[in-house]
Amino acid sequence: MVVKGGGDLGTGVAWRLHRCGFRVLVTETAQPTVIRRTVAFASAVYEGSITVDGVTARRVEDEAGIRAAWAADEVPVVVDPQAEWVARLRPLAVVDAVMAKCNTGTRITDAPIVVALGPGFTAGVDCHAVVETNRGHNLGRVILEGSAEPDTGVPGEVGGESARRVLRAPADGIFRGARAIGDRVRAGEVVAYVDDVPVVSQLYGVLRGLLHDGLRVYAGMKVGDVDPRAVVAHCFTISDKALAVGGGVLEAILFLARSEGR
Image (cartoon, rainbow, N blue to C red):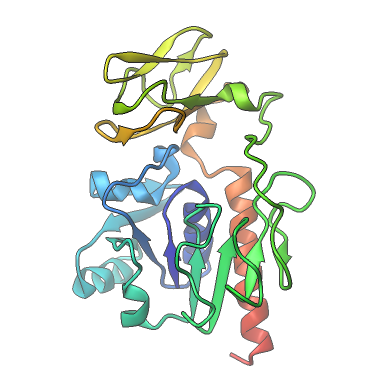
């Protein structure tokens, strides 16, 4: 299986597939802009490796590294923005977990089974199945015809908060964190800087996500996330949403494989 994108949702997908015995490869960009870094296999690009809920992902550079990671019961992560490894490995399934809210290049012909997450894809056209990512009654549902719910531009509600829980860059510049993921923060507290401009939390809670230092950001870009439920453990375990989406992807792959007699 190839999972394009190792953010928190892509990690939920890769983690579930790995736990079910599939060999999984995650592709990423050279500088992932992942927010929930402590639960994202994409962090292996920066750190070399990361363990999330008992599963280790490791950055590798070539096919030998990929196969060595599989032999060690790990998830290999490669810097491959165009997902060129798909053509090289010819996997049973490709999962687009880039979460760009649009199709950035995935085709229904990329693999025998192609699954995509969230809006921007049409099942039967871009992929064989779409998995709903919007919080609510349909979260994790497998869509075999049509598309997921459209992007509203409004963050999902967590602990009674929506837009205020999201930290956004106040200006263009270079990002630098002032607090760490898992820290409790207060409303009005500075948690990061963009150049010398402070990024301020709008509410009390736990800092659940924060960009990697040194990334160039633009004004209005999401750079962090404060969880008003203030449960520190939530920062270091796969979320309910990622587990639901991962379960939907697993269902889609098994359903489509059975339908094709694989």
